[in-house]
Image 1 (spheres, helix red, strand yellow):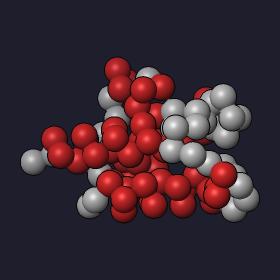
Image 2: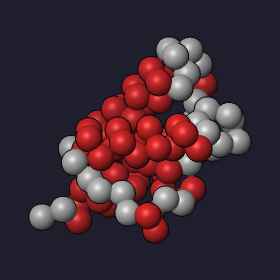
Image 3: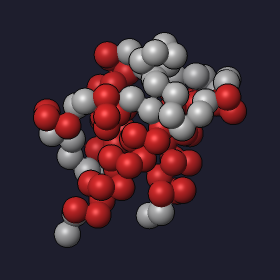
Image 4: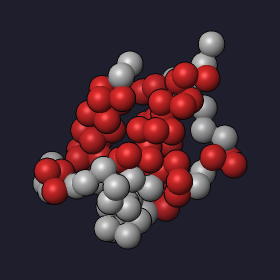
Length: 87
């Protein structure tokens, strides 16, 4: 799966589950989910469940940091790294 495909999948999930189909066009890849009020702490759990189910990755406790999960770009990079590490 390419980074572009990962990004499209993540954007679709964010749009449907947190933005309810509105405002996705204005969401830049670097926009912080927390700062923009898009994803709260419960939403992070939903995002993790989605990533694990959709991409077949496991998110470890020590990976639950903003650098991995607080923007479209960070999630795309995180999933890409996890997928490339999977045998």
